[in-house]
Structure formats: C-alpha cells, structure tokens
Amino acid sequence: MTEHEKHTEEKIFEAATEVFEEKGFSAARMQDISQKAGINKALLHYYYRTKEQLFNAVFEMLAKKLFNRFSPIFEENLSLDEKIKYFLREHISFLQKNPRLPSFILYEINQNPERIKRLIDNLALVSSMQKLMEMHKAELKEYDIDEKNLPQVMTSIVSLSVFPFAAKGILSSIFDKLGYDFNTYIEERKDFAGEFVIKAIKKGK
Amino acid sequence: MTEHEKHTEEKIFEAATEVFEEKGFSAARMQDISQKAGINKALLHYYYRTKEQLFNAVFEMLAKKLFNRFSPIFEENLSLDEKIKYFLREHISFLQKNPRLPSFILYEINQNPERIKRLIDNLALVSSMQKLMEMHKAELKEYDIDEKNLPQVMTSIVSLSVFPFAAKGILSSIFDKLGYDFNTYIEERKDFAGEFVIKAIKKGK
DNA sequence: GTCTATAGAAGGATAGAC
DNA sequence: GTCTATCCTTCTATAGAC
Image 1 (cartoon, rainbow over the protein chains, first blue to last red):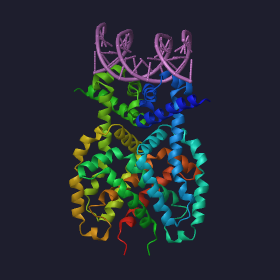
Image 2: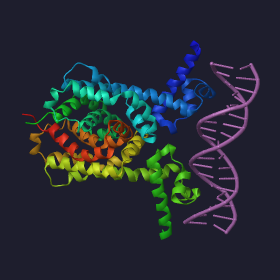
Image 3: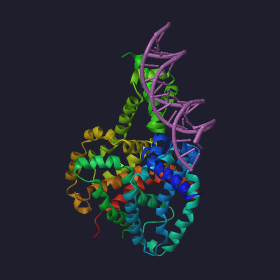
Image 4: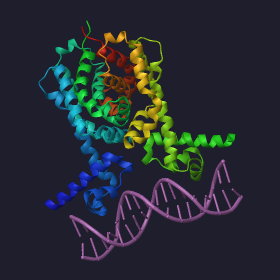
C-alpha cells in the first residue's frame, strides 16, 4: 500500500466516520461522504465495496473507542471509592469530547444487535469483573455490593455518565427553559456522579 | 368523518407507529407501513400528505406518551422518599411494556432537536419542579438537594430507569455472556433504583 | 488509483379511474 | 375513499476511459 493510497483510504474513513456518526446508517449518503473526503463517489466503492462494509468498519472503530474506555478502571491501583470516582470523571470527560457517540452506538446496536456480538467477545467482561471483585474483596464489606446486584450497580454507574449525552437533545432544550447550561451541567457532573454513587453503595449502619 | 374513514386513518396511524418506532424515520418505508395497515400506498398520502407529516403525528403521540409519565409524581400525596420510589417503579414498569420508546425518542430528538421544542412548552416543567420543591420544603433538610444540584439529581433519577432500555441491545448481549437475564434484571431494578437514589441523596451525618 | 457517465433499483409522491 | 399505474427523484453500485 502506497503512501497516497493510505492517505485516500484514511480520508474516506474519516469522512465516513463524521457522516455516519451524525446521520446514522440509513440517513447517511455516500455522496456526502465522498464530498467531505474531497474525492469521487466511485472511489468509496473501490476501497470499501459497499455502504454496509464502510459502515461496519466505522462502527467497529467507534464501538471499540467507546468500550475501551471502560477498561482502565480494572487496572489502576486505587481504592474502590477512588476507582469509581476516577472512572466517572474520565468517562464523562471523554464523552464531553465525543458527545454524539452514545446516541449513535446505542441506536445502531438496537437496530441490529448482531453488530455487537463479536465485539463483546473481545471485551473479556466476565473475567474483568471477577478480577475487580477479587481485588477489592476486603473493601467490599463496606459496600452494598454482591454478585447478585452487581449488574444493577454497574449499569447504574454507567448510566450516570452515558445517559446525559444520549439525551443531550432533550436536556439542552429543557435546561434552556430552566436557565441552566448543558456544558456547565456536564462539568459539575464529573464530580457529582462519583459522589452520588459512593453514597448509594456505602453500607448504612 | 365517517366511521370507516376513522377506521382507516387509525389503522394507518397504528401501523406507522410500529414501523417508525422499530426502524426510525430514515429506515422506515411507506411501503412497509401500508402493507402492515393492509391498504394501498397511495392512501397514506391521501390521509397524511407526506412521510414527514405522518412521522410527526406519530412522534408527537409517542413523545407525549413518554413524557406524560413524568407528571404523576408531582401530584401524589406522598413523602419525597415514597414519591421517588413510586415514580421509579411505575416508570420502569411502563418502559417494560414499551421498551423501544426511549431509544426511538432520544435518537430522533438528537437528529432534530426542533422536534421537541413545542412539546416542552406544554410540559410546564419549571413550575412543576418549583411546586415539588415547595411541597417538600421541610423534608428537603434531610437531603443533599438544593436548587443548584437539582438538575443533577433529577437527571440521575431518570437515567436509572431510562438507560437500561436505551441500552437494551448491548445489555442483553452482555448479560447473556454473564448468565444473567435482561427481564429478571428489569424486575429487580424496579426496587433497586429507588433504594439506590434514596441512599445517594440522604444527608450523611 | 481516480474520474465521468450511467445503469439499475427503490422510494416518495401524484394522476386518474372507479 | 380506495385502487392501479406511473412519474420523478434519489441513491447505491458498476463499467470503462484515462
């Protein structure tokens, strides 16, 4: 593959990423993608054969980009408290730079759940979660967490960071009316979310 | 309007609701809608002129259906604790019967935020929230809630009920691998979510 | 590898008969 | 009010020249 080829293929991929993320698969137009990439429409097919294949390449990259953000939490050498706060701060900051990602991924997966199957295999979620539980076994006695409600706790944590972006369109409108500002709300959320979770899962006396 | 007319128009509307909710605006086909309604494609245009207008009618109905579920909480004569628990139980039960609603509404609003503007005016959210704060003024001293973090608290509550359905495609896949079941998870969530929130907002000593 | 031109199919919308 | 037939546009995809 020559330098030039690589250049063109990358331009296409980047343009496709922008258009698909903004419009979704069905509303995206090959014409828009080629224009944004500054090349001819026929070239898209030369490099990626079909719209579907181009979309799959983009989708896989974006999904990995999003899900890989969940991994660091399993590695850091921190207390469980700090780990949760750290994760939520980082995750919200990441989504702040990629606000359209949650809506795009969630929607396209609901449209076609098969898309995610292969990716999930690579996530190694089961072992990571077991590892996490093991690592903080001693601390866990201070929390209302056990194997049974672990999915509830995990999804609650994730929802606090993802939902505001998935619902950005609605929240922005409502905040406008209430005199709040979405960006300020997100800034505050970086700390709020962590504290909210910690209080919720600490064992009451 | 004759009985027969009404019948046909309703059949179209119901078929359109199903198709739009499942596929979204762009991927939905007028052909599919007419087939599902058991009538000819031309009739869709006779009753609703364009795809856009048919979609708007459906969208408005579904959005109201979803948002009206937020109102009861402002009316019931309950303590703040009970009100939150009651709301989450009811809201999750409602979404259990309409699992595709969150994904559809969130996505279509992000695609076109104008769609929600008019609806929000009718929600009277500002006054309702003020009324709620006023009503529980005495109790509020026991909670970490004030005007400043009210949006954080409110969106956190909503996210706990809405996110699992918006992310149903992903969660189902992950749960499969972990040996959990999505429906069981939702059943448990009806109580879990309320308790989670209450603990999170109760003032620590 | 990149372009122009165009095929070929699909989808929204309308005309016109009944 | 409902149907058949068809128009017209748009979109994906390919053929073929350079």
